[in-house]
Image (cartoon, rainbow, N blue to C red; front, side, top):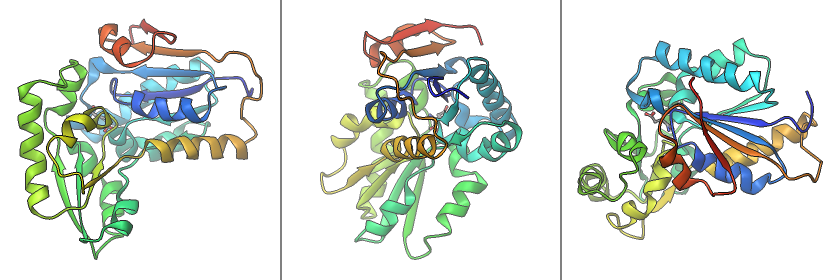
Length: 259
Ligand code: DGL
């Protein structure tokens, strides 16, 4: 595997670009290829088998592009499919899981909230994680409808505001002091969320941790790109590229691809 081969990332849509941004900020010399499987979003309502099938399809596309490592920039795909991906393909995988541990450790009210998809919250991996923190009350909430609105670029609609209020205000009443964003789409909602919850509640996601872990594994496997050439950043979507173009900078390239 060559050091200047790209890092591959995939998500059910545009949300994983929140992870790509962290990876790119930490590893600016790395080439990257991002797959937005928006045609099949949301993954959160699919069965485990469907999620495994789509995750394999995305992985194979990235391997055709010679990716040296794959970042599963989707909590739903990670919690449902990463074991199967690691067993099937001979490439390192970095997954993303809801950041329950840092929230649980730091919580003073011993009560934390987590907003994630149905697929993530019902996965065995998530259950395993939660059971490591028996002394903390974890309030789980499925973010029904949020991913679809984000995929449509509908962040500031009344519908979004009402959904967020319905999901978050009951957690506030239960005295959470940490809100874990357990879906890579949700960091794009932080401005809207901050209008609803008090500033004393800390919002956390896993983007930075994923970027650090990606760097660590590349270092360990001596796969860090040490060339100073301008790195290329490519985004493929199988849906309307306009929404993706709005959230990644103009320098980067967004292409439609039928996959
Ligand atoms: N962005 C994804 C996640 O992190 C999946 C959202 C979805 O497609 O339901 O869970």
